[in-house]
Image (cartoon, rainbow, N blue to C red; front, side, top):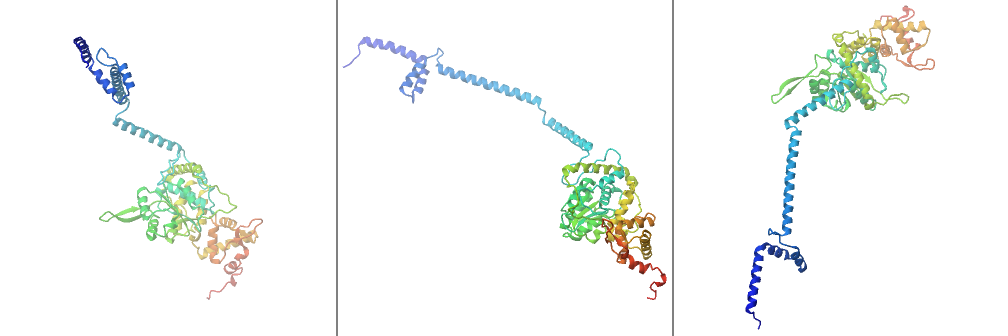
Length: 492
């Protein structure tokens, strides 16, 4: 049986004391080793036991390293916090307050708006956007009227009939002098078929007229409200698509704006249906296929649009390329109007007596502008009025018909000819009438009661419209007989 002697017991007791002392010195070492030994293989436990030594403070080297790392991490966080506070302080010093930012933003916007306005005034170009365009900035220098008229009638974009360019140029100037007018003639661009240049014409006009409002679809309510609020130059394209559908109300609004005194429509507003007057006084151009209603046509200066022939040369209109040139012309129109507005107020120009009452009213403001332009503009304007009046020309009295017929006979006999172009005959009659302006259209209207109509005739290598001597033989025999005794008796 194994047993212990008394000497062995004493030696064991001393070792036990030392062991207990060691356990009291480093109690945490056992806990650490115990925790690390869980889940580790025997070799790893041996290595861990060998690598861990006791520090005099009672901490292992691993624990001391972890503490140092934690201290460094805390110091780094403290340093980052101090850095963030410093950055925030610097940002708060460098960045303005919300009120300061708003004030600076308003100042910046004001400066930008002023620079934009100065740029527009210096360049005089208005950016085309949807809606009502602003008034052109007047040209900086005085403008010669004749030069301006010729620049406006340089119709390189459209194939237009005779006298149309003169009428359109005068109407453009009319929109700039509208404030002193008493009658507002409508400019009607009519064509028998589509693709005759109506939309192009209105696009060009939108760059030239004052305060353009270009639209291709609009309601009657929008028209009188827009006119009452802004008094634009209304440019109505594709009118055949909505004018007829919306009936008499639309026509009544457009008709009412022909004269200043009658330019008003009444509507009710609000829950109590209170009557309110809306002004309809504004310049107006209208483009459509076919004819206008009679009441609107009589208030209009009509331009018969047509397609370009293969042998006619025109320049295709490009807003980006041609817009700045038209903007400059608009500024010149605004300057000329500003300088001549007082002279146009109350003007009463001479109107060709061949125009009927409504046609005379339509052309009166345009002829006043032509007289103010000077040069040959007054003559050209009246020739355009007679050329475009067409069926609106009044048939002269019987005495005047006989006098004109006699003058025509004298032209044939004195020149010894048997044919003459319409233009040459008008020039000869104008000389006889002491310079009175006669147009081919007026001449054709005057000869209509005699059943005499112009036709193509050959003169040399050309074939102009004109008249043969034989066209007048019946009229001369009936109304200007060689022997008055052979005239028809008055018994019947």
